Amino acid sequence: MSLTAFGAGNRRIIRAVRPHAAKVRFTKQQVGGAVALLAFLSPALARPVARYAPTVVTVALVLWVVVAVVVGNAALSADAAADDQALAEVEQDDSEDQDDELQAAPADADLFALVRYIAGMSDQGTAAHLSHVLDEGQARGLFEGWKVADLRAHLEGLGVALVEGKKLTFNGRQRNRLAVLLEALPESAPGTLPAVARKAA
Image (cartoon, rainbow, N blue to C red; front, side, top):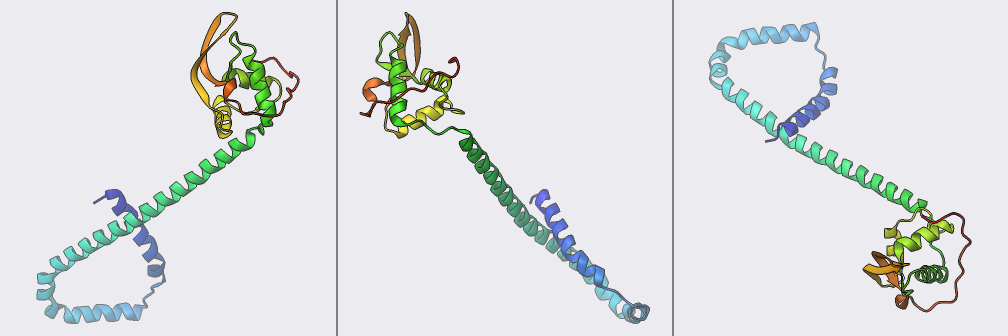
């Protein structure tokens, strides 16, 4: 039995009963009549009350606890479901906000032209590191808000195979990074490169 569930159920029951209990009003005549009736019946009820009162009280307490726990578990489950729903809505809003911050992808032909341009900077001239493509693209006003993971997902969505840890050298300086091979690029019309707006990272 969970004390948390019992506490939550107890509070729910009290909140549900309190408004109805507050509406109950007894007149002085009703109270006086009840007292007189109790005084009249007390000699006859003394022995049965003494005999059965502990059992009745115990059963009543057990029933109260069971009902409170059941109500409390239901309340906690409902609250947890509401919290999960609220969290899911917040995460969805965050995801939508993040998507809204990403600049639209360039035309495929322009993207492939940028990849070929970057590949030409390496000593091998056969591949381009995605980080280099992203930096150069952002220097030319492309990929605003993008990360390497976004560029990777976009290229893979176009069916372009990527290579992990591709070794390329630049004036003899070696770098091993995620790359796209020129031979993996699909056929496309010639693209154009936007002018450089700022120095690449």
